[in-house]
Image (tube, rainbow, N blue to C red; front, side, top):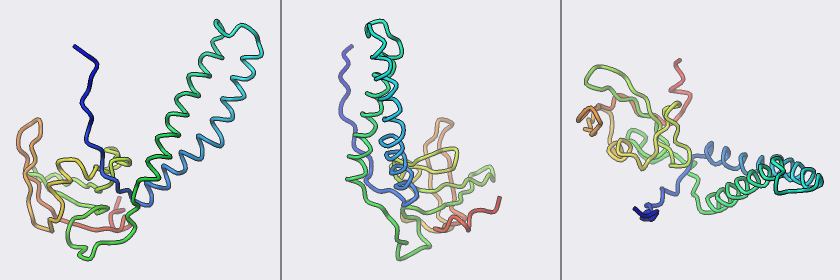
Length: 172
């Protein structure tokens, strides 16, 4: 069995303003705070002599490689991404950035926000616009139902609310 993996389809190039700020803040932190600290630690470890058995030096170099990889990724991604900061013309339909409340066949209420692939977070209810649920929800409106294939079988979800302002959803 080889190590070859076929190329994956690139994720959508959309992001919310909050997601863009988060990625930009991460880039700034890595480049201006963390990398200089690690570079100084590597410099100090290198001054101690034999680098081949110096754990601090070896680990520091590994951290620098990881930081540089992430910085390259973030710079490239931020340059090629589109920030969606306007509401759609029809706010009764589900589009990018929408908060959607769904009811499943057991009467449970699920709340999701459709975001870009760089900012999905299941803990916060953020799902990627490339996910099967989000794809099925796109352009639907209140009282529309979708069927999603889950490990437990097909699940029917009905839309009970669509909104674009997070403040409307903060009823907890």
